[in-house]
Amino acid sequence: MENDEGVRRPITQETPGDSTVEAGFKRVGAVVKDAADKTSEKLASYREGGFEQVSQDIVEYARSQPVTALLIATGAGLFVGMLLSLRRK
Image (tube, rainbow, N blue to C red; front, side):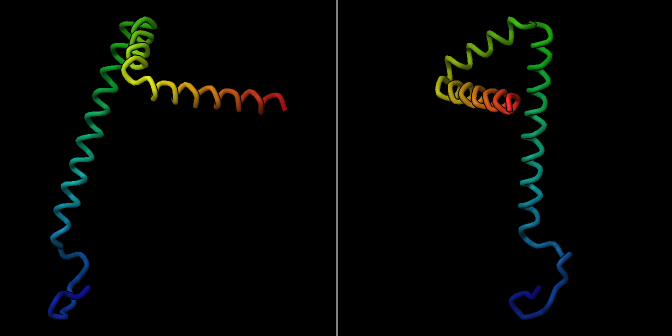
Protein backbone atom coordinates (compact mmCIF):
# COMPACT_ATOMS: atom_id res chain seq x y z
CA MET A 1 0.00 0.00 0.00
CA GLU A 2 1.40 3.43 -0.93
CA ASN A 3 0.89 6.76 0.79
CA ASP A 4 0.66 10.20 -0.88
CA GLU A 5 4.44 10.44 -1.41
CA GLY A 6 4.53 7.10 -3.22
CA VAL A 7 6.32 5.35 -0.35
CA ARG A 8 5.15 1.84 0.36
CA ARG A 9 4.13 1.10 3.91
CA PRO A 10 3.27 -2.29 5.41
CA ILE A 11 -0.39 -3.21 5.60
CA THR A 12 -0.05 -4.07 9.29
CA GLN A 13 0.67 -0.43 10.14
CA GLU A 14 -2.27 1.22 11.89
CA THR A 15 -4.40 3.37 9.62
CA PRO A 16 -6.74 6.16 10.72
CA GLY A 17 -9.78 3.95 10.04
CA ASP A 18 -8.59 1.21 12.41
CA SER A 19 -9.80 3.06 15.50
CA THR A 20 -13.19 3.58 13.88
CA VAL A 21 -13.51 -0.11 13.10
CA GLU A 22 -12.42 -1.01 16.61
CA ALA A 23 -14.96 1.41 18.08
CA GLY A 24 -17.64 -0.13 15.85
CA PHE A 25 -16.82 -3.62 17.10
CA LYS A 26 -17.01 -2.39 20.68
CA ARG A 27 -20.43 -0.85 20.06
CA VAL A 28 -21.69 -4.03 18.41
CA GLY A 29 -20.35 -6.06 21.32
CA ALA A 30 -22.16 -3.81 23.79
CA VAL A 31 -25.43 -4.12 21.86
CA VAL A 32 -25.14 -7.93 21.71
CA LYS A 33 -24.34 -8.13 25.42
CA ASP A 34 -27.32 -5.90 26.22
CA ALA A 35 -29.62 -8.06 24.08
CA ALA A 36 -28.33 -11.23 25.75
CA ASP A 37 -28.91 -9.72 29.20
CA LYS A 38 -32.47 -8.68 28.31
CA THR A 39 -33.17 -12.13 26.87
CA SER A 40 -31.89 -13.80 30.04
CA GLU A 41 -34.07 -11.57 32.20
CA LYS A 42 -37.15 -12.25 30.04
CA LEU A 43 -36.57 -16.02 30.14
CA ALA A 44 -36.22 -15.87 33.92
CA SER A 45 -39.53 -14.00 34.20
CA TYR A 46 -41.19 -16.61 31.95
CA ARG A 47 -39.90 -19.39 34.19
CA GLU A 48 -41.44 -17.64 37.20
CA GLY A 49 -44.67 -16.51 35.51
CA GLY A 50 -45.31 -19.58 33.41
CA PHE A 51 -47.80 -19.74 30.56
CA GLU A 52 -49.81 -16.80 31.89
CA GLN A 53 -46.81 -14.48 31.60
CA VAL A 54 -46.05 -15.63 28.05
CA SER A 55 -49.64 -15.22 26.86
CA GLN A 56 -49.92 -11.80 28.54
CA ASP A 57 -46.74 -10.62 26.75
CA ILE A 58 -48.01 -11.94 23.40
CA VAL A 59 -51.31 -10.09 23.78
CA GLU A 60 -49.50 -6.92 24.83
CA TYR A 61 -47.18 -7.15 21.81
CA ALA A 62 -50.08 -7.80 19.42
CA ARG A 63 -51.89 -4.72 20.71
CA SER A 64 -48.84 -2.48 20.47
CA GLN A 65 -47.61 -3.84 17.09
CA PRO A 66 -50.68 -5.27 15.29
CA VAL A 67 -49.28 -5.32 11.74
CA THR A 68 -46.03 -6.96 12.80
CA ALA A 69 -47.90 -9.51 14.91
CA LEU A 70 -50.18 -10.30 11.97
CA LEU A 71 -47.22 -10.79 9.63
CA ILE A 72 -45.48 -13.05 12.16
CA ALA A 73 -48.65 -15.13 12.59
CA THR A 74 -49.07 -15.37 8.81
CA GLY A 75 -45.48 -16.50 8.36
CA ALA A 76 -45.79 -19.07 11.13
CA GLY A 77 -49.03 -20.39 9.62
CA LEU A 78 -47.48 -20.70 6.17
CA PHE A 79 -44.47 -22.49 7.63
CA VAL A 80 -46.62 -25.00 9.52
CA GLY A 81 -48.81 -25.49 6.45
CA MET A 82 -45.79 -26.20 4.28
CA LEU A 83 -44.44 -28.70 6.81
CA LEU A 84 -47.78 -30.49 6.98
CA SER A 85 -48.16 -30.61 3.18
CA LEU A 86 -44.66 -32.11 2.81
CA ARG A 87 -45.57 -34.75 5.36
CA ARG A 88 -48.58 -35.91 3.31
CA LYS A 89 -46.61 -36.52 0.11
